Length: 224
Length: 244
Image (tube, rainbow over all chains, first blue to last red; front, top):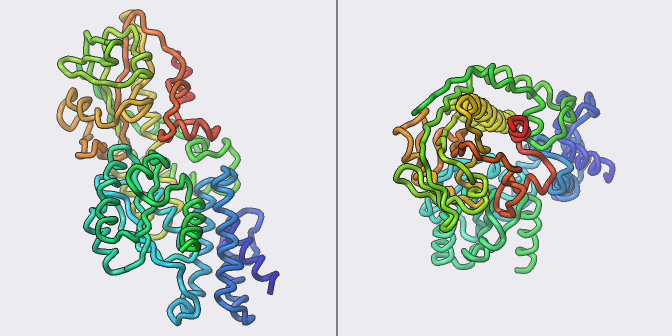
């Protein structure tokens, strides 16, 4: 069992999707996250164990390497792709309730801003970490965040912005969310965002990298 | 005086290593893994990158060290002390804008929609590299033109960097004809197409092309400062040192 889980984690860490995928070059022709996940489930390993001790371990490792500049965006995207492929095998267990998501995370780029590469990366890493992600896209109005939150009580909201001018729009969104749903955890991120700004506008989490967000979310939820 | 250029994609001479540098890789270090993807994007870029750029010359201008402002025609901008230091000795400025066009971003979005996140990212990088390379060419043209009349030029200086508030981009575009090079500003001062750059280049007989402004800037919210601290290089910036 441990070997299968380790293989899954390794495939996720290095972005090995399946036997046919050429990436990474040194794993060419070998099995990927797709096959190992199927094998693990067929061998009777609990789906929750496959998720937490296989898939999530791999994503955690690549997230840390990304934070340390040991890998760059393309490698993280390949890991996320491997994760998504493996996740297909686990989806039936999410539907049946055998596995439950950590929670719902509503994410979007704030109104006035049309950048989405960073936001997409964060969304993928959240999914890989066991979150149910609702991606609202770019240029998202305050009301859209609020309406989505109405339909998903207890969800965490994540706001992204790339410009200092659009970063300012986060203030209004955070203010409205806190006014309507004070218990909502709001995370913010994007190139110009800082911890100072996060504190100033009353957001709960800021991290310069996706892995930090995942860790902060775990800490906040654990604290609750 | 207004000058515009429509450099062909081939003039940008973008190589896979340029994409690598923008991503953060040491050149040639990721080729084994991603060469096919880089080459695919480079191969299609000819039909997705549509460069348009140009500048308008303003002379005289007033660089005021007391209130850290620069007056261009009737427009007064406050670019901050780091930028002002770069403009020292300038008797005129070129207000420039440059875009790689909308199609490269559209292609990136199409890739996202069909789940090809790697290609989506690489097209986005391609757009950034293209517009910076085009701005390099624009700068070379400006240098030629001004050197011919005994003037020297500063580096390219843009709102949003080194303490210059990006909101001042509105003032900058107010100095250019409406829809200059096909670029428009949104209410939040975001340029459309997204893969666009704008700014000013100072010129004058006594202008000194000083060290990169990033060296003197400690704005932790700036993406280039973070890259500097990460030890990676801003694409296109290496080229600028060759212009000195």
